[in-house]
Amino acid sequence: MSGQQDRSCSPSGLLLIDKPIGPTSMQVCRVVRRRLVNAGASRRVKVGHGGTLDPLATGLLVVLVGRATKLCERVMAGEKRYLADVDLSRSSASDDHEGDLTIVNVDRIPARADVEAACAGFVGPIMQTPPAFSAMMVGGQRAYKLARAGRAPTMEPRPVVVHSIDLSAYDWPIASLDIRCGRGVYIRSLARDLGAALGVGGMLHSLRRTAVGPFGIDRAVRLDDVPDPLEQGDLVPMDSVVL
Image (cartoon, rainbow, N blue to C red; front, side, top):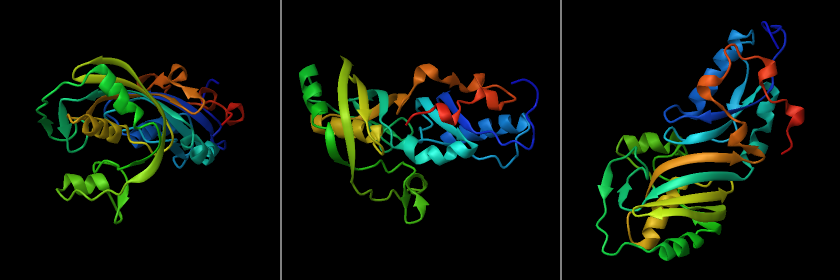
């Protein structure tokens, strides 16, 4: 579609973004909204996302526009796939590079078979404790705000489902994992708990989301490549989506 949109029309559809390191998921949504407005959409056009991706993570963020925001719960319920590098030599209060890092003394470096066996222990329905540095609400406040203020909350374990964890590469201290999981799984928590199971350190070194439900990273566009102005024709139509 060329030219500005009819201002009486409200755009709707999905946009698949390959999020870079740095911006939050909501900051990406604000970029999308601004570019929609530049094409003539109302400043009140609804823009949301189908599952948060941490600032230090890259990969697929499903952005929902207009009437497509009603699909949020269905998108979030879809299976997720991640490529994660876990550092088994260090730990962190945030379970990633955001917090202060601590080098962990390791008496015996785990063999590949040890790491594979430990990974298998986290496949299936499990109880997982979210990181203190997370967006979960605790007493009406975001957990990460309390943690950053030096009042890290006690996080209660909750049931989640991990479908598979494949150890794609292992070169001490980095274990590279290909993870398929359900809604609500924190990969940072998996990194922490994997290290604990092995008796070593455990923190997320890097994370990339490659799939959300039927959507793959191969269909995503870099945030810098999102058109400005962003028009209806640039969105994935709702009626073409099968969830």
